[in-house]
Length: 482
Ligand code: ADP
Ligand code: GLC
Image 1 (tube, rainbow, N blue to C red):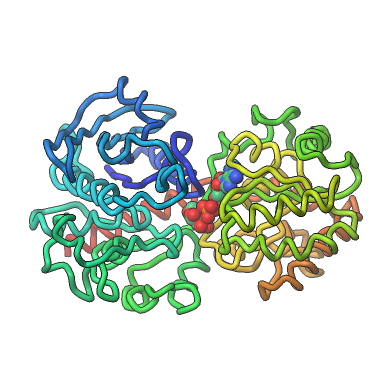
Image 2: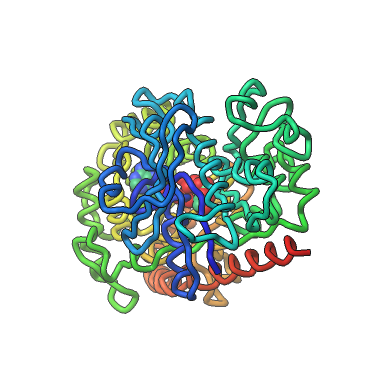
């Protein structure tokens, strides 16, 4: 099968979160199964050097104010179709934000271009390569099926994947004409959303099938607390919606070969983990103590992720002998609160504000546990890295966190299946108790190390889920042909 992925991020090239990891990993798994996958992503400034090595596969003389080319490149085991539109993507700042941290004022044009060029490739192919199925990811690719519909020509099946419903790409109705969208589509069962245009709604309403990144999140999305306004549409389309759990790239995230670790290790010999722990302590200015539990956090610092609750848990955690090493960036107030905490609890709390891929690997390889107190979490990847690195996840029971971690309650321990600690309801008090439970378990080395080894053996690769994507693609094709 030929599959076109359309997304705004792809690891290891451009990444702000888990979306990138997934886009960088699923195509490899599908190719290993004998399928062809190409990934259409914007040629942001960081990707410009790659253009030199590629080949032009299509060109548009004027798209939203400038010339656009699509350049095909094979890099890092992936086939990329780079959307080269310097007037939209050759800029400083991050993928979505200006250097001052504001949304780019023309984000609607930037990602409409992604959808429109994706629709052209879907309909006409790229240098003779025509996909059977297009898989659009999140709101940035949402307009693709809208443009495809406007072409009024035979088209491949479209699957939209929701990685996070909180981001919906909503823009005022005055943008209809500038985006080249026909008024015909501006209806309740099209792209209209409370009087505005929603890119995500377009992707959900007009795709043949919809997936999201865990089973629990697929059910949660039908409820107002989680659906964020899309629950009605998703309930109407529930028959076309399914959850496919994320996996991780087992080559990139391998404690046995990870170049970011001073001492790689595996489930048979965990000695290296202790050496890595000392390195984490040094990098985060923590008082060295091999026998005190070290918790880490690697996350965007936004209200979704629940780290404000962690601040209130710190005195209790420290009283139990625990320490925290946190790497994150996001909302300034949360960043500052953690910097303050690292001053207040010197030696017990270490904080690095920023985005650092290597350091995130070191934290997984050198910490005893990783905390993920999310208020909602479509899937979450850091708990999966935690499992693979024997870094016990302490997680809120929601979305993909609920689906991937088996709680170390009495039954879980007795049945030898526990891989982490869950808490629910998602409150500071329950989180605090979960951290205390983790410290108590850590103080029982036999139980703890058995849990670490079990976690490391828990299957977290893509093989099962890649097969599930194929099933959905086949179902979408069949539905379309009927
Ligand atoms: P989300 O996509 O909602 O941010 P995920 O858990 O799915 O959450 O994925 C987050 C990804 O981003 C993981 O690969 C994690 O290691 C990485 N990450 C998050 N914050 C940082 C950071 N400050 N530095 C390095 N990597 C980070
Ligand atoms: C989103 C979600 C996260 C998920 C990731 C990859 O960013 O917040 O839970 O793991 O996408 O699907």
